[in-house]
Image 1 (cartoon, rainbow, N blue to C red):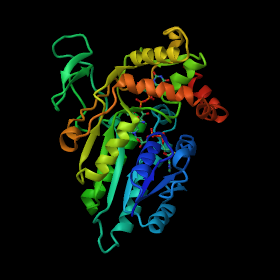
Image 2 (tube, rainbow, N blue to C red):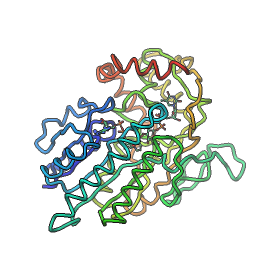
Image 3 (cartoon, rainbow, N blue to C red):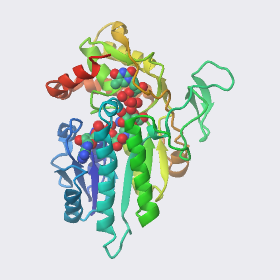
Image 4 (cartoon, rainbow, N blue to C red):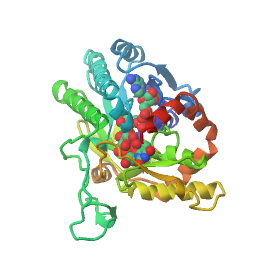
Length: 377
Ligand code: NAD
Ligand code: DAU
């Protein structure tokens, strides 16, 4: 049996990764280490919580002694590290928490793995430390079209596939890091620590940088679940700036599938970018979400467009993210499985059918946070 720690397994992406591993690998023991911050929710894992190959441990990754004990107790072979503070707007208000969790917490996980593994007779053999990171570490891409065509225009990825894009440059694995927000700066720093543990001590590490995920169980402070819930309740939709910023959206289960593949087949010390080749301006995606919610609620499609409210822009708002995931496709054969139209339909349906999940989160403390967050906009 392989003992694998998944950190942040009660969060959005982590819960999908835990579910996939627990169901797909009955001979693995999955240890979900999560502090259960505001973003951690055990209701995300109800369907697998009683499986014999699953253990939940409530712990803070910054608490080094506790993390050491977990490593010893469970004879850990591998780590898939997702625990982090993940929301850019919160990082602008409270950068310290991001440095603490994302940098010091990652360092604590690395050091515990190192001290435990280097004492074993087999040392690093069969061990793996896989760090999940973001495309935001590369900074922002420009919206440019070398031939003067109005974007989005069709372009060819280095994989040879054609897709729609808002610029001619993409995030590739060899780009320099240029983070702009406290969130992305903290993730960039954690990525550097992971690579330093490989280069200095020989720890078998892997880093992946992924684009924006969407799908079930995402905390409703992020664009898509927040807007689905607001449309349902006919609350204003706060669109930052002009809504022109571009993001590359990937269905969360496709990200979990990539993590499974890379954990098992990825090359040590490599970086892989994961993305959907699926660029959207915020305002366009918002219109698709409004139409889909309206239709599924039996309202007239588009009747909630007037909820769109342009508000003060996010400070330092990155203009465009676009991942080139050709390396992952070429070397390991991964591709997104869902078309965006299919993924967004599934996502909206899930939130509308799981209103109790949403209500549990959006009542009480969250309500106060949301009001304070948007009070000045
Ligand atoms: P999330 O905010 O939904 O979940 C984070 C989880 O980490 C929560 O369960 C929380 O309780 C836990 N956590 C936070 N601090 C902790 C601590 N000190 N100790 C233990 N657990 C702690 O985040 P997410 O969107 O699922 O993102 C997961 C990871 O993927 C993050 O590392 C993020 O940077 C990365 N990522 C996210 C996206 C995205 O679109 N959401 C894209 C690329 C990469
Ligand atoms: O690119 C990967 C990153 O994607 C992850 O690393 C982050 O953890 C994840 O939160 C996400 O970051 P973004 O800042 O892109 O996601 P968010 O959902 O917060 O915002 C998406 C876009 O929508 C962004 O351009 C800001 C805008 N926005 C967001 C909110 C919450 C609005 O216009 N209004 C809003 O209310």
